[in-house]
Image 1 (cartoon, rainbow, N blue to C red):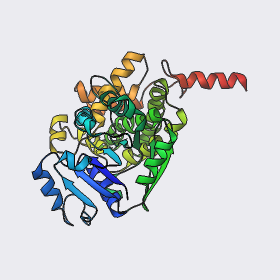
Image 2: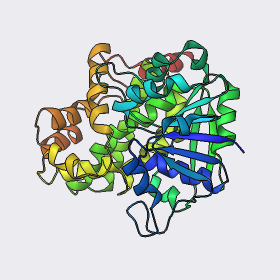
Image 3: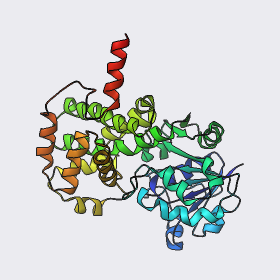
Length: 352
């Protein structure tokens, strides 16, 4: 059986470890400290991880030794927060071998550079290993997958055989894994949907109802597709699992940290107060800043991102921001400043 090193004891990293261990994959989950490793080894049903899940110790080793985790691994899953991805890749870079597949399971953009996680990874590893990088994204609420509820996801790589190798590794009875070659679209779908989930949470917190939330979701999808296409993605990818699928799950579920944060903002709590009280990270906060920077740099119109940015970083009132979005002057729904989507639509109409 293959051996997998998972870097990061995030909820998602731990969930993937449990899923793989249950299919008898040899999993090494790396914890940064021995204290954390001991705590995870002692996880029992009823813990905060999940009320009815415990680690399968015969196939899953939690270790604080990076060498022990990485030695003889066939694949490495990077399940760390986006803002610490570069640091963690630097730690594992010296252990990489030519046969290893490197899977990014993070959904975010790096502050300062605004780069996707696969770009960050590629910059920190030797050129010979870069073709073996792939990304994992989709409607994957960890708490449901941990409870063995069915789900699907997408793994994308530039080389098809790498995506298929990761697909075989990750597929499980309750996790259907599709492949894609659009790394840009899959990554951006997973990252940018968190911005829209913040807005959907605000809509729910304000009691706007399902019509308003559906508006946030559908307009949000158009907006993030416009940015993704401008950065080189296939627009069809954003209508799939890594785009629309992930967007629906994150905007609709109370299990979503980004949705929760949006709801809590409408209660008058500060961003710092909310994030300090949360277990885990709401990636939408930093992604909003990175996406806003990209929109300014490219001259793209992104009204939802703009309003969420103002709420998070300029102290604007969520109620006012939501009202302004709902009452915005409407044009053609595919029209936006420097949106390739609308130009494609017009060209197709002329040729029809």
